[in-house]
Amino acid sequence: MTDTAEHIHPDAPSSDRPIWPAIRRGFRRKCPNCGSGPLLRGYLKVQDTCTVCRQELHHHRADDGPAYLTMLIVGHLMAPVLHVMFVTWRPDPLTLFTILAVGCVGLSLYLLPRLKGVVVGFQWARRMGGFGDPG
Image (cartoon, rainbow, N blue to C red; front, side, top):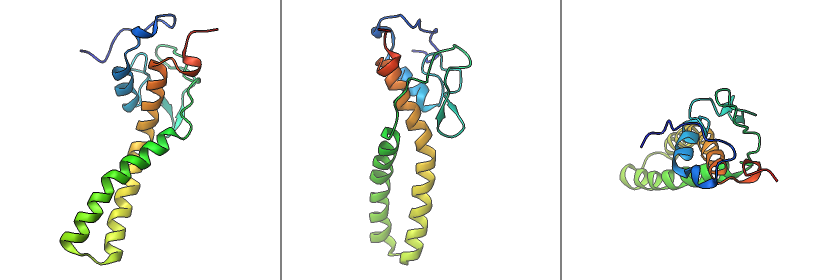
């Protein structure tokens, strides 16, 4: 299955908008419709329209969802790392804090725009908010 599907007509039924390709495209920070145009302008600002296929993207309502998902993922990844590091090596607390703080911040900065793309892609695929049929 290819991720570079043809552009989907805005009036197509919701079954013509598969969820997983839209989520993958969002994770790559690309337009959920065409997969070519950039989804984000800057670090977190979503484009009003795709520069390639002209899909309107201003309808998104990502709000705090990407931040909560980022905290959930980073917390579940870093908590076991903290435990293993502490039990195995018993490092100095300042060393442990420094390593984990850099890891948490780096992972959060990496994931936040990608998870915002995932949320926008999911909303687009499910026709949530303004992405749905007019009326």
